[in-house]
Amino acid sequence: MSLPNGSIRTATTKSDQKGEMGLRKSGSDPHFLSLISPDPMLPGYRGRFAPSPSGPLHFGSLVAATASYLQALSNDGEWLLRIEDIDPPREIPGATELIISSLRAHAFQWVGPIHRQSTHLAEYHAIVEHLLATGLAYRCRCTRDEVRRTATAIGTTGPVYRGTCRDRGHAASAEMPDAVRLRTGNSTVEFNDILQGQISCQVAESIGDFIIRRKDGLIAYNLAVVIDDAREGITEVVRGCDLLDVTPAQIELQHTLELSEPTYMHVPVVINKHGQKLSKQTGAIPIDDQQPGKNLFSALQFLYQEPPNELINETPEMIWDWAQKHWRPQKLVAKQQSAYEFT
Image (tube, rainbow, N blue to C red; front, side):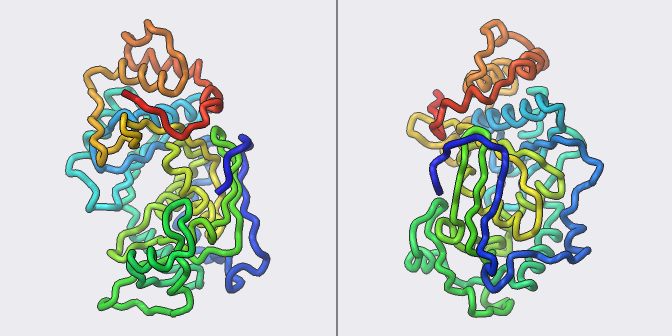
C-alpha cells in the first residue's frame, strides 16, 4: 500500500481486462440485488457509527463516534447506529445496552431504528453462496499455520495467502469445515481518503484472497460491513485509522458486487502510553456517563477542534451546537500520524 499524498474524494479500481478466470462481476440476479439495494429515496448524505459489543464505550470509540456524527451534522445528513454483533466469541453480555446508554447520555441522536448485524445473517450467507456459485469465491481448508508457512509475503493485513485452494474445487463437507475466500483479480484499488490522502493498493499482492466466511461459519467483518453500508445507503464512512489497511479489500468486494463506494475518512486513533490502540483487549476503561460534557470536550480536543475552555461545563446539547458550527476536519490533515497518545 502506498503512502498517502492527497485528499480527493474518489475511489477506483484498475483491473486487468480479462481478470481472474474472466470473472470480476457478480451478475445481475434480481433476487441477489434485492438483498443489498438501498431505498432510492434516501437523502444525499448518510453516515454511521458501528461499534462491536466487545465491551462498553471507551474514549477511543467516543472519538470515532464524535467525528462521524459531526460529519453527518455538518453535511445536513443522517447518522445511523449499527451494532456489529456477528462475532459471538468476542461479545460481552450486556455490552450493546451499555454502548447505547452511553451514546444517549452524550446526546447522540441517530435516525431510524438501531441496525443489528445479527438480524441479517441469512442475507450474508446468501451472498457468500452467490459468490461461490459464480466462481468469484472458493472454499479454503488451509489452517492459519499453513497460511503463515506458505505466505508469499507479509502484507498490509498479515501473511498474504498464496491461493493454495484456489483451483482445488472443494465441495461443502460437514466433516471438513472450510473458510470461503474472495478470488481477487489483477487489480489496483485506488482511493483518496479525506484525511489520509491518496491510497493505492495491489490487492492480490498486498492482501491476497481474503476470507469472507470463516471456518467456524461466522461471517467475516469485511463482507458484513460492505453489505451493510450498501443496504443502508451509507455515503461516507468515518472511522479510525486502524481500519485503513482493510479498506482496499472492502473496495475490491464492492466492485466485485457492483456496489457504489462511499467516501472514506480515517481519523487518528487513541493509543495508551504503551503505544497500543485503546480497546477492551488493551484494558481501556469505560467512559463515565456521569460527565458527558467533559468527555465530549476531551474528544473535540483530541480531534484538534480547539473548543473554548468554558464549554467544558456545558451540557452535551450545547457542546454539540458549538461543535457543529465549528467542525473543521481539515485541522487533522496536518497531523499525519495514524495515532496519538492520550493519557
